[in-house]
Length: 280
Image (cartoon, rainbow, N blue to C red):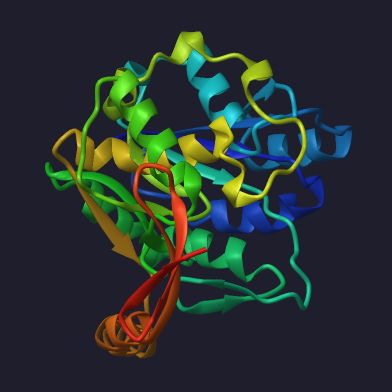
């Protein structure tokens, strides 16, 4: 099996941490490609010491980690590799809590959960390789951060883009944070050479902003189910599994009592109070 490890290195100070995680890769033929707006001499030296044949691709700092990923596959054919391991540096949220899929994330937890699901240790990487060996597997990602779509771009904008590229799926979950192993052949459906840097936002936008970058965070995760493959999730402990089982039973009751959601083609917000829907 031949793997392309694609690391978008925006926060260069995180390089040492990522090299420690990448050291767990074994049992396959793999290449390392780094993307970023620039690379310091110190970073290049450290990467060369770790993997002498590593390659570098300088690209515009737009579209978060999505545009650099698409840009890389404008230079590399999906036929050249069996799988791509997509990784990227991620900022520290400090003490600010972000709640995703029932988990409160602070500091570097978001980054760490995504990467640990793939590269926590040698055994975890072997688990990923075993999943990739399954003929029905199209993607491997974190169980904790594989969640249902929410927000505006997850509906009309996403469906329009899927239709434009000729895909259709009833699956409505994606890897929040877009770090995963993906079967490279699934990328062939994308019009890779048509994407341009100017299509992507140059500044941070809210998740409800409906940018092309946010839409493609979802599209990349949906490439597997839309083409008949399954998504294998990893990296969850027993306590988390119990919590999720409880949440699956309690959430419908809580949503009936009180919830706010978007409904209809116009994505209008509704407040549900004891089963009564009130437009907002």
